[in-house]
Image 1: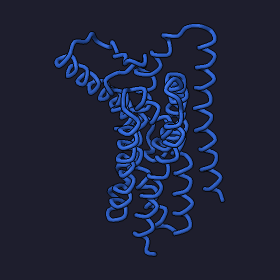
Image 2: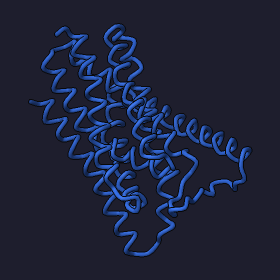
Image 3: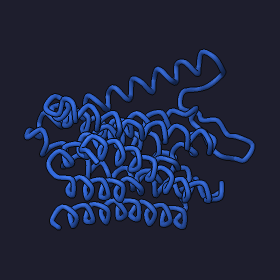
Image 4: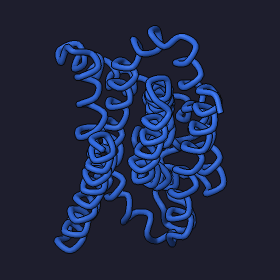
Length: 264
């Protein structure tokens, strides 16, 4: 196969496989588990932002100050976007600020705000993954294949967190799967653009990585962590901490796998 065929095949397969693998776990979880497992999602988000995305953004830009400025601007943009979503809902239905909706099953929802934030950030991240896959294949077919496998490995734990956030945010399981699958096509777009205009696409990588990190940090800290404080009892707190640590650990393990493949 030609290089462009390898890029198209691995970009499509990589994005779809990571979403499907994550969905297998997320869809088989009981509804009662979702509020508990959201702690895992927080850990996965923070782990991906601080252990995976941010270091790559700083290295790619070569300027930690500019990367930090982009992240700060990104957090402000996501704050304004969330405010706009809140204002829209407050104009079409009765609501009070950050009061969330509770469905008949007792699950708290936030009108899809957290879900939308994570979809935006995930799309940026998937696009960058496509750029990285294309760059690796244009260097060497074997390197491209290893890079694609490594990306799938580190995407799965993050996609699990994304599914949990979408379910927590009020999306149905079918909509969560469809939107995550649609977001995964950004990998193909990034790969194709990188192949035809690699230098221009790579110049955008640090910015997109920084914006992806900003989205992950904002959702975890502003939208999800406050919900954990509604259960202050010791047993719930211990459970939340353990799951957050597990989420971070899953990203750390995936990061080591990526490093192992890179060295090999």
